[in-house]
Image 1 (tube, rainbow, N blue to C red):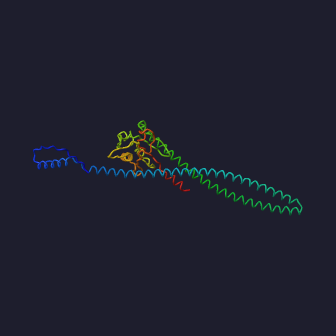
Image 2: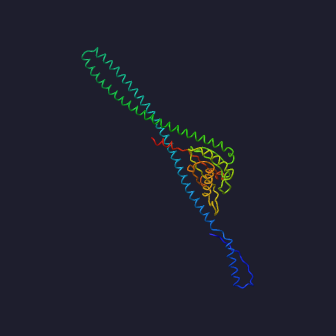
Length: 339
């Protein structure tokens, strides 16, 4: 579409009307040819807008998948804690069973002493007493056999229970060890990033750990001009330093989220609203980090959150880019699945 403007034309009334109309028509055509804006530029803008909408939908889907994976991990962690509590309860049961077994051993020893006493009486007593003692001895012997068999079954059950508890305890220790290693790696990564970006600390950059992930937050004033999505020079320096660190961290997924304030954008041009602005800013950061490092593109997701995840009443702090570093938890999931 082209927009044309035809200015007013003043002519002298002394010309004949037929010639006057001819001159006016020719002038209008000439002015229209030189004042129309090409439709191609509008078509390019519409194409960019459609691409942005597609990128935004893809990014939102990827962000939702990562958020679901995070919730699944938290659920598995709760399951592990419940299993640990059950293990402690089973250990208490095992102790009780061992005490019961000791009581049974004491009873067996008491029965053996009674048998020895009765044998002594049998040797010393009369024939009649001997018969009675022999009968009592048989009864006692049978009771003893039943006690021994019961004790053997108890021992087998306790042994099986003990092995099960040992296996469960081993798995829990492996889980705890793996989680501890992951936590230690996350803390080390946070320290590495903080040291590398120390010079930007007072310029709206923060690094913190939450839910086993490292969050690198950069206020928009460090990266972009107002309402723009191309990264400024100072912001480029911070992002390049971060990208150089992350290119060596092969077991991390990188989620780049764009956030805006609640101020409404009123513009016919791109970006037309806060959703577009947040997506475009996140995408610009992702492209810059990939360009300036050897990071694998498949590890990076760019997403726009618009104005809907504020962190402060201060609008300036809500206008930000959050780079969320998510550890690869495949080993942990495998260990949890192999129950």
